[in-house]
Image (tube, rainbow, N blue to C red; front, top):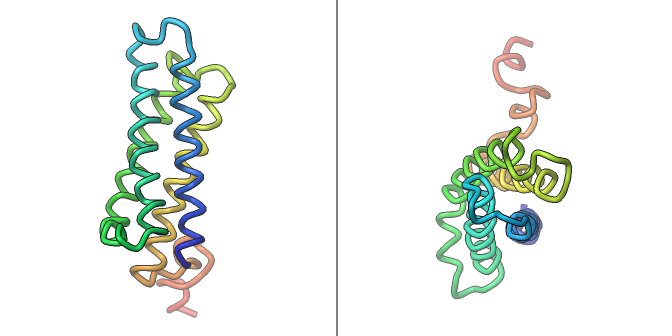
Length: 142
């Protein structure tokens, strides 16, 4: 995939991170709730990192950041796996259905898709093998 395709997921992650941050910050009494503060931190950190990757994709002078894109994608996937678990848990700020709930899941999806794209692009991993659609040992036995 080219830079524009990857940029789509980075933009999505940037936007969804902002929504999580803004929604958590809008909750009254948020500063006294550690899970709410964690949701704010998830959104802010994720936005800063993902927007930096968007800038690296489209601004030539920042292209050296792209060497780290795979590592950043791994970090963001783990970051949002934990963040989504905390945000949408029973005591989390996104426990009720709302912006924090939906956009935490969207952020996790976007982070995992960036990782998926980088793995298929950089390491030549066949998409059919990753999704169980063929290849691998099963194809060798046929």
